[in-house]
Amino acid sequence: MAQVCHRFPQLLEALARGVIHLTAASLIAPHLTAENVDGLISEAAGKTKRRGKRSGRENEAAGGGVAG
Image (spheres, rainbow, N blue to C red):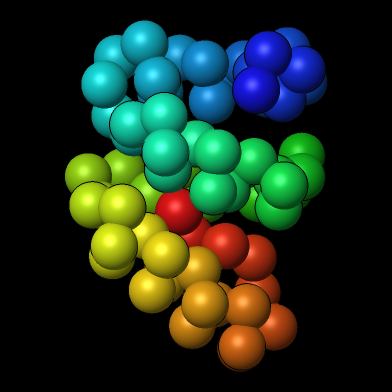
């Protein structure tokens, strides 16, 4: 997680502010790119672990990233 937060400081900031929880961060981390980091953090914000996993599966099926 530390390496991902180093590459994407927005993720660390969202964790520090409580916008997303550590589980959501770990779910979206493998799918983050410079182009989608802000969008995936926004999608993951406020979601429970269960809703995040469900969104991720639906997004992957549609050809997108994981929405945490």
